[in-house]
Length: 289
Ligand SMILES: [Zn+2]
Image 1 (cartoon, helix red, strand yellow):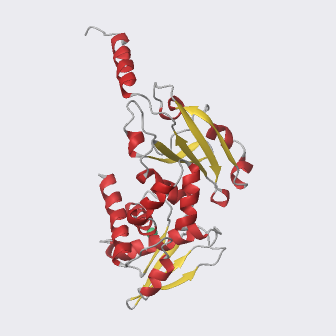
Image 2 (cartoon, helix red, strand yellow):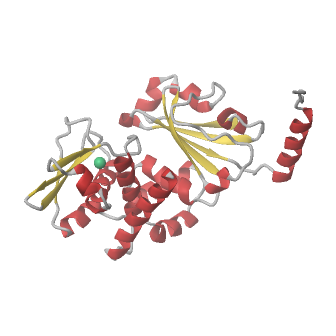
Image 3 (cartoon, helix red, strand yellow):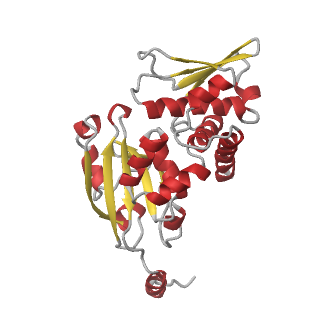
């Protein structure tokens, strides 16, 4: 169910960009807000804990956005999130009874309305009709995400998620902190690989992964270090497949989290997997009841 309202929110964000006749990247959410006569202003840099606010008084709307993370991509995403609350059906009624709403943008909240606004923002700032052309020109893995995030002026994490949704390649992106995985997005091609156990929010990193070792040194994250190495599908997805995956690991600085991009050079052959499955099945002891 959840996948449906998420993709619907993304679609509404994309449609909004289309209605506004935006024909090139980057999409500027502050300009959009001002065109809609929404007053926009930054929150003071020492105001932490909220990513932004939507405020209303006598039918006049305002957006405030966080500046404690000094990153234009994150700020754009936060303004896009508030435009989501302004546009998405039911949000005004649900969130604005006090005349203001404080947000936690960036795919970290568990609240449905927050996540809907996040997906709206991703769709608005990276609409398929503009994003796909850039994606087709780009390389695979973190290089692609880095270039796309500069082109779209969006945060690395938001771009990574959009990249996972749109790329034709088998990839996965993971956001972690310490030894805990916050979330994982897999591309469709990756989801097609049989025998993978999908990573759940809050699960622990396998000790065999590059990310697990990287996260043991806090400076790696605060200094925005990057490393690359190899792991296997087994390490990441508890699969019996010993296929190698390339692991790119990037510290996200003040954000305090780590981005991992998994790519596979050669896809496991589905027939081999089927054979292996049959083998495992034939060796599974059967007990008489
Ligand atoms: Zn919000």
